[in-house]
Structure formats: C-alpha cells, structure tokens
Length: 120
Image (tube, rainbow, N blue to C red; front, side, top):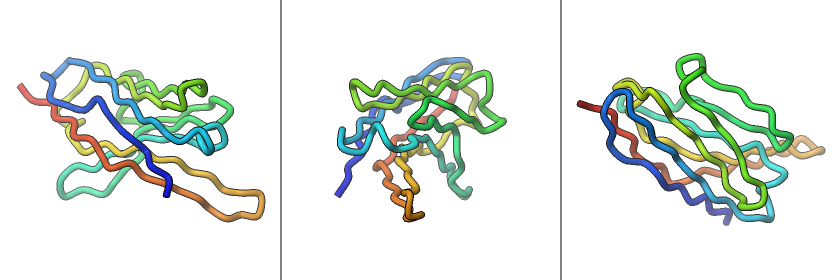
C-alpha cells in the first residue's frame, strides 16, 4: 500500500498564505505525476495543480498566479505554495500520485486530505 503523507493545512485569513507538503515513498516518487486536488463541501473534487516527473506544471484557472506546485525529488516531497488565499479556496486538499505505465495500466494513489480554511 502506497502512503502519501500530507501536512501544512490550517486556517488563515483572506490574503494569507499556506504551504502544503506531501511526502511519498521513494520507490514511486520520481516516476509519478504529483498533483493536488481539493474538494469543498457539496462540490466535486477538482484538480488544483500538478507537476510531472519532468517538472512540467499545470494549474486550474482559479489558482493561476496565486498557487505554485513544486517537487523536490531528493526529499520525495511535493509542495503547494498558496498565496493570496480567498474564502473560495476553503476545501479539503488531497495529494495525488498518478502514473500510466507503458502498458497503459493506471496507478493512482491519494493522501488522507488536509483541511484548508480561509476566513476572516
């Protein structure tokens, strides 16, 4: 069982910043696309941002220019730096590791989730 361990959630005022971290086993980290998703109450889980094994990134339009995803392959950790936070960023944030093999088998793993609350 692959375990992704998240940390860094919490409560912050609008305009504030938080950094989420997700540690993954070294056996998979370098090969997998690492991503952050979020799910607000009553809404579907959505992609926030992802970084491929080669370092390419993509983001949801709602967070572009405010959030930055990065990975440290030496520490087997992916980060999500969140700046200029808004109340609508409030959600449970989930770390994801995803790989499609050369034989088109998909391997995907999820963290347990960490709560981010943006409120005055």
